[in-house]
Length: 331
Image (cartoon, rainbow, N blue to C red; front, side, top):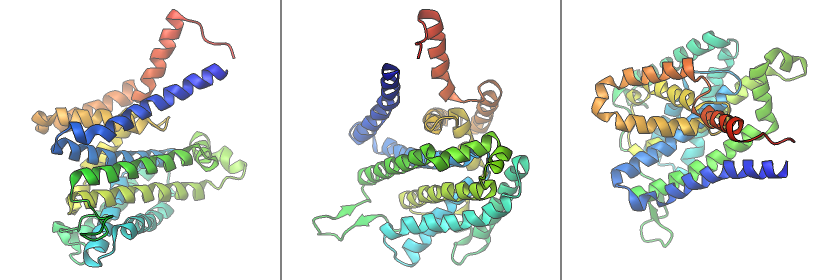
């Protein structure tokens, strides 16, 4: 048993150290364009992991990308119009997103399944059209432009860090992503995280043992919304401008594809999905007109033939390998 536990620990942490090690040396070995893609990749990892957290209760939404947009707009307005420093903007953007998430979650908690899915789309589109129609403070169709870049200190200070430099912003995003993943992992392994998973398994049984299912669904929606807002804040600082077209339905579909392709059973499934589909996205740039068809086919294939996602491949191969070449350990 001790040997099996040690092997499981190595299998878990070895890929993590390899990925983090590569990301740490990436600025030295990739071009500026690829470095920006890696920065976007890290932001997408936060978004996908927060969406996976929401699915632990069985609730799949079509408004998670809108919640990211709420964080992005909050960042743009607070940073540009009010001059709030980034160390206050980012948590404020997360909390504003929590407020919007709560407004979404209360009516949505009265629905389940397909009704929840469609109702979340309607609420998200309502918010996006508010951004489109109101020029003050959202800028209408042109959005919010000229968002100031991150800075620590003032020019000339010994501790001054200028995040106009893409390498500095990349490492800031990397550190922030690792911190968020640690927090989300701890939540996933906590008692409240297990309660959310139990709701997905059997909500009626959870109610019978004293778990308030409605409150738990609202809570997970708000927690996931907070981290989506953080991802939106990072994206706003990265690109320097935002508009409603950044958060259209097609972007939400890409998020669902990341999660479906990677899988949601384990914590690392969405990470696998973001890595694999980011590679497909870049390799398919010459076929940009055909990309929606390609991604649609990928989504259908995984839903039909591999509903557990790519995260199920390694256990399958391990099981086949053990059956062919060795015996399972007797605990």
